[in-house]
Image (cartoon, rainbow, N blue to C red):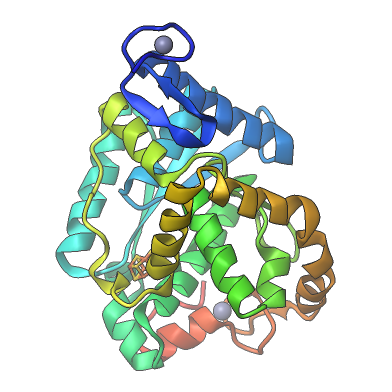
Length: 305
Ligand code: Q46
Ligand code: ZN
Ligand code: ZN
């Protein structure tokens, strides 16, 4: 197995590109793919301040590393979700990464700062844990970006994540979600711009990137992920990808090129109904936003900021 670029021994095969790469040229491929996604979709302009949502997992640490390598001014933002040992461990990977590279990591702790954790918040709000978790994270990312004067929030969603979410949304024809499933969500109605620079890299590639760059990350899945439908969708797509490399890429990028526009009006109609939450001022369609309601039901505090 030889590197496509230099013919030296390869360390990884990327069947989607029908090619093998040595360490140096694989790392270059990852940087090129991220650079290409940023340019293609107009994700980040030079000189903008970037806030990377960091979980301590491979994708978020890889995207932070890649953005710094590409010369962007990127700080990290970590949320302690209060999910037992998983949170303790993931926080220490995020901190170790930032410390080792001299990068700035902002932190919020749900139990310490808001008086609830994901398991108790989910029970109190009668939501599944990933729903309570997702809405808490979205709210806190937006708030951290706006409070800190950042231009853009980066998340570590990769090609596998986006293809799996698209698969789920398509199975149910969730047209409002389909209209918003874009690699860039522009800033508006009090939300910062949100971008996904890893959409051109598969999960296996971000894991390989971390290993080859010496980035330690939390390998265990979140214990609350059990029963998460996206894991099942990923398995189905992985089977299709083995039989036909490039399937995930074609599914997702074909959607962006040929179908996503058609769902835009529904997603935009929903945005038009937004107004400030009576408690925290964040944009919402209800009187009080879902985050403030969750904090209140969970018996927490700190929603009025
Ligand atoms: S952290 Fe949160 Fe994930 Fe855990 S509770 Fe679900 S959403 S699985 S990215
Ligand atoms: Zn090479
Ligand atoms: Zn609110």
